[in-house]
Image 1 (spheres, rainbow, N blue to C red):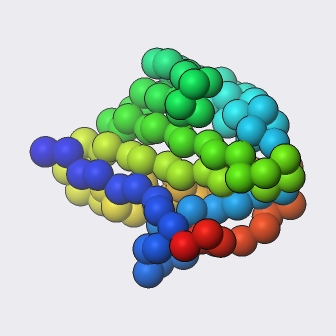
Image 2 (cartoon, rainbow, N blue to C red):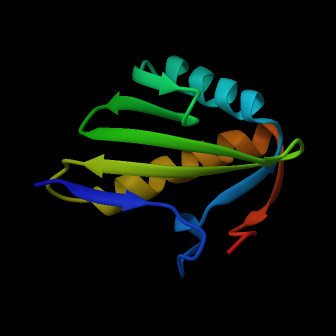
Length: 116
């Protein structure tokens, strides 16, 4: 059984809200690709036309959607399909937080769900 978790502008929980950073699309994309490479996660595809990348992780599929709102504000949404039998939500939230923390260490964090 697969469990699905995703971020969006209007979620009631901060961890599931769209995150915004002071960076360009290319900067966020490169940071995500470097992070995945360092973790040895397999890049399945990256489509610059749709600003979206897909990765295979142990027991998870991760899709990253990056939208450049303007030249100095870029949002990132995450979509996880998890196949863990137990602790799926906890592991997915931990992965969200790992990605957000990595980005916050590289770029200025602007806020959550800014264009809701």
